[in-house]
Structures are given as structure tokens and as C-alpha cells.
Amino acid sequence: MMKITGIKGLLFDYGGTLDTNGRHWAAVFWEYYQFYGVATNKSVFYDAYVYAERKMATNPIIKPLFNFKDVLLAKITAQFEYLNMTSLVDSVGLQIVNACNKLVEDCLDHVRPLLDTLSKQYKMVMVSNFYGNLEHVLEHYQLLHYFEAVVESARVGVRKPNPEIYTLGVSALGIPANACLVIGDSYTKDMEPGKVNGCQTLWLNGEGWEEQPLHSTSSADYTITDIAQLKEFLV
Image (cartoon, rainbow, N blue to C red; front, side, top):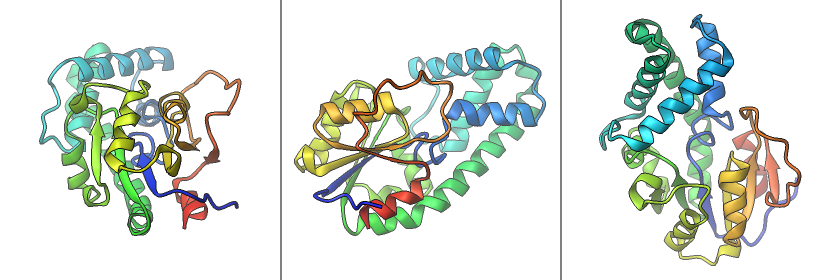
């Protein structure tokens, strides 16, 4: 596999990249809805998923000191609210929350040694759409110290796919954009805005959620299917 040369800084996405190793969070939730027998279909589930995400983004539900399990509980509560299943939050809902949290812990155990290695060779920042508590989440998972800065949408007031959030990430690194590598699971939210900023891009092409077929992959310079493969490109 070809090594990527000329890179001095890495810009990592978080959700769907580090925490699930390329799996869209809708796909994760849907898997556990099926496993625990939640009585709904895929289309209605996705409506509930979108409802919850919008509610999280527009209401101060997530507090700065929430850990990720707290975030998951807020998400499932909102999803079940949409589905008129609020009475099941403390039973089935908690089972889904615990399963999702275990998945994240396993994925981060998988990626932590990689981040430890990369942080010794590259400056790294996190660029993420999140709810205002990402630094606390990263600290809880013992990941925060790997990153020079955390550029979080709820704190900087700009969300992906707006390229300005990656402009802030490049600025935080203090490295020319052409020496920076954007790493993320979303083609439209990570690869395209990264390329607009003049960065090199590496796409973690995992399990999406019925995304439209791509007409071109010109915004992704490199592609992997497992975050561990990053080591083959950079170390």
C-alpha cells in the first residue's frame, strides 16, 4: 500500500469515524432496534432518528459534562418520543443504549493504540459536528490528550459540510493545508469540505445509510474500510 508523503497534520472526524469505525450511527441504532425487537419499520425508525438529531441540535438537551452514554440516553429518549414508545425507554431503550455504548468502547479500544502512534509523528486536531460536550467525552475515553485542539460545531457556530469548520481546523494546526490530511467517514461532510480547503483527504468508507451513489470520488485522495488501515498509509 502506498505511503502518504508530505503530511504534517491530521484532522480527524469523530462520530462515525473513531467511535464506530466507519458505521453510520443510524445503521448502528437500527441494528439494535432489530436485535431488541422494537416494533417499527426502517423508514419510520429513520424519521425518529432524524427527529432526535434535530432536537439535539436545536435544544440545550446535552449538557457540557454529559458523557457519551448520557448522550445516547438523550438520543433514544427523543427517538422513542417520536415513536410514542416513551414507556419503553427504561427497559428496551436502556438495552439499546448499553449496546451502543459497548460498541463505542470496543471501537475506541481498537483505535487508541493507533492514535498513540500517530500523535508521536503528527500534530492532530478533531473537527466534529457535536453537541458542546465533545472535549468531556474525549477526556472520559482518555483520548483528549492526543489532539492539539477540538473544533466542535456547537462551540464554533459552524457545522459540516460548511468548509469553514475545516478552515478552523487547519488554522488550529498551524500547518499549510496541503500538508494536512482530513480523515472521516462522510464523503459530503468530510472529504468535500476538506478538499475545498486544499487538504489531502482519506475516506473511511464503511457502512453508510443509503447514501446516494457517488458520481465521482475526486474529493477522496485515499480510501480505507477500517480505521486500522490508516497505519499502513502513515506509519
